[in-house]
Image (tube, rainbow over all chains, first blue to last red):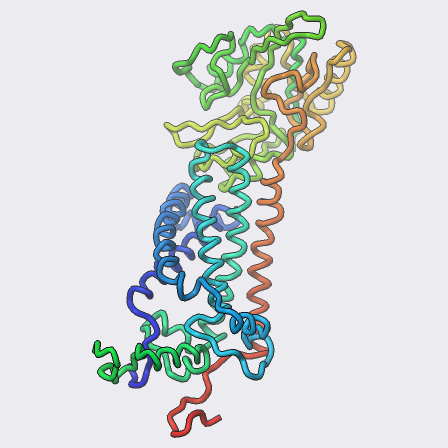
Amino acid sequence: MKKGMIKATGPFERVVHWCVALSCLLLCLTGMGMMFHSLNGIGTMVGGMLNLKMIHNFGGIFFAISLVFTIAMWWKEAGLFSFPEDWQWIIAGGGYLWHVENMPEVGKYNPGQKMFFLVVALFGAVMVASGLIIWFPFSFGVSLVRMMYVLHALGFLIIFAFFFVHLYLVTIGAPGSAPAMFTGWVTKAWVKKQHPKWLKEMEEDGSLVVFGEEKCSKKGRC
Amino acid sequence: MKKELVKLIDLSRCTACRGCQVACKQWNELPAKRTKNFGSYQNPPDLQSNTWTLIRFQEHEKKNGKINWLFRKDGCMHCTDAACIKVCPTGALYHTEFGSVSMHADKCIGCKACITACPFSVPKFDAETNKIAKCDLCYTRLQVNQPPACVQSCPTGALQIGAKDAMIKKAYARAAELGGDANVYGDKFVQGTHVVYVLPERADVYEHLPVDPKVPLEIIIWKDVLKPASLLTAGAVVAGCFLHYITHGPKTPDDETTCEGGNKS
């Protein structure tokens, strides 16, 4: 690790992130294997469609548990918008769509990330609820189960689309972001560019952790 | 491709002998299970995973106060626009060359989607095999030019099978012959069923018989709208990301602020 890197996430945060991310990906793949006949081959890979169904259903339970941790962990930081600066950011498209002078400075999570979190939280919960009802249809009325199929497909449409936006931004769209979820350390330049307000907040309250300078923390927890 | 077949059920000729029900069980090797007496000759109370056809008994009071005992042979209608086939994730349910809806039992994963989708509540779940089961119009018999077991057993001619057009013609002729409320049920919805009734009474008189059956709207939204839309949306998003990258470019950090005085740029 290079000196001067800034700690962006803790190990717990990263574990929860990858639990929810990988199980979501698994559910997308196994679900598509059942949604599209042309992708039934995904079932063959796991020893048949029945296995695929079981992986999907029990993977869903793992996802549900991960989602609870995700929401509990990020709700305060990423679930609430702070106006007016978040609104200005949204109007400016976050500076992603066209060049904007004097972008409002964003904290730990920008409104785009907050929207992504809220979509994952909301539609993740929708997927869990509709999935459980589809799994045990005899415990519910037929018309409700039919509606759950619609919600389950709608949730997939939205989560799948957001997945690609997320994937783009953390790879080539906003380089330097991915390490936050691998090592947990990001460059100072990246924080300055992406989350300048957060950097200031951390500097002010002394929670900034810089690699190689851990001792300097004002809280004295080195 | 062989000719589309239609099984014609002329309820005016049905005496509720239940020969068809027993013949179905015998041919398809579906031994009876413990059943419940619910105050009717109808037995078992509903279609089951081991009862693919069932004579429903119904007491119907006519306008003149006379009680009419109605019999209806219930079972798979073998829809052309079959909701069960539409939702089956594995292709276990499929159309045969006769237009009937048959099933590859080995492919069924017991997801129960067809049970939810069917407008006639026909597929039934068998917890022992973890699969659904329903009438396949005796596909193996059709393949060797034999009528289905139920048709073979019918002593009154209430059940017939034959070329689709001929059977529908026959049905209308019979309904006209009966007169009154008699009508043909099956050729007008879900692009035509391969089981067609001649009903002596109006369709809404019969219990458990939908007057206007169709593939449920939710199933159409799911399979015909959201399913393709999910791929299109994902494709549009990927294309949008690529366009963003090549037109606007990524959001990269400014040059590292190693020099005194902040950013170089």
